[in-house]
Image 1 (tube, rainbow, N blue to C red):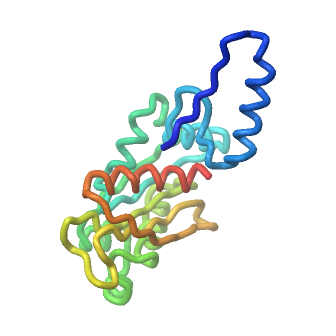
Image 2 (cartoon, helix red, strand yellow):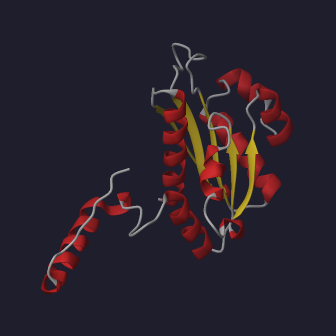
Amino acid sequence: MLEVKLSIKKKTASQALNDCKTRIIDLLGDHVVGEGDTTLAREVMKSLANDNATLTVAESCTGGSISSELTREPGISSVFESSFVVYSDAMKIKLLGVSQVTIEKYGVVSEEVVREMATGALSLSGSQYVIAVSGIAGPSGGTKSKPVGTVCICWGLAEGLQTYSFHWPSERTLFQTLITALSLDLLRR
């Protein structure tokens, strides 16, 4: 995350500061997370509260770090319904209703599987919004077609789920941190 700080020494320059802030926001658009001391999780929480909506999360490769990031925010219980950490294929099938056929056909790290994870989590929780992730955090487990650092994310509303596959090869903990931030930012946008 990049942090941009603007400051002035003279109160007479406050208009110039506001003009500069406006210009930066215009240039960066939805890349601006927020102003002041904020986090991605806090901005997601604000958006959900404004929509009077709730969120559920289904995590595999992040092992609960998305949920952990969310639950650091005071007041998150008003918008955060549940979290499913389903690391094994068996639990994806048993808890979230992911089809064994889908796993066999596309692999557990696929847009098809995260979509089914998301649908299952939404069905169980009754939430309006969801984030679901499955990936290969490494250092082993990758293949030629899906190397370490591959991740699939599904996010959005039940009637408008979006999926995307990314490849971010990095050390395991950094990978999980990056995917946590990316997932929250995709939902925020």
